[in-house]
Image 1: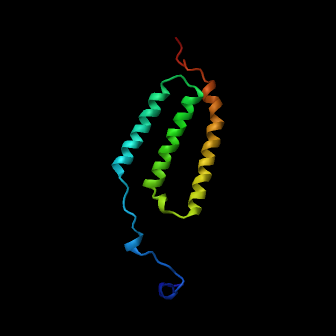
Image 2: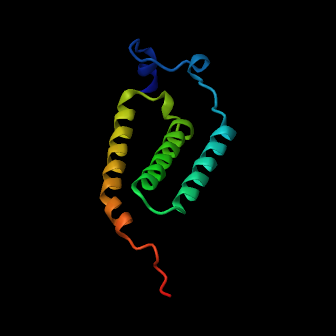
Image 3: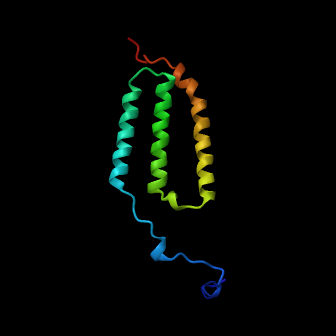
Length: 114
């Protein structure tokens, strides 16, 4: 199908540049949030590894991923099928968390012999 036939078809909806532009998010605010959550996960990682510590580290990582996905990948404005794929990826991350959680908590923290 060539471009003349597509342009003449009334069922084809082209985006209107005047109304389709959503603007840019505040990238500086997002950068500061990402650094703050990174610093929080580093600080919490210095404490003893309890289930709360690991949960907070994974929660901050999840929230950082959501910030990047929504703002830098511009998925905030995508249709529902894209979000179904994102939720499938989140399910894989949760399964990964529960898969490695026993390995993290069972590891001896003093790995350097004295």
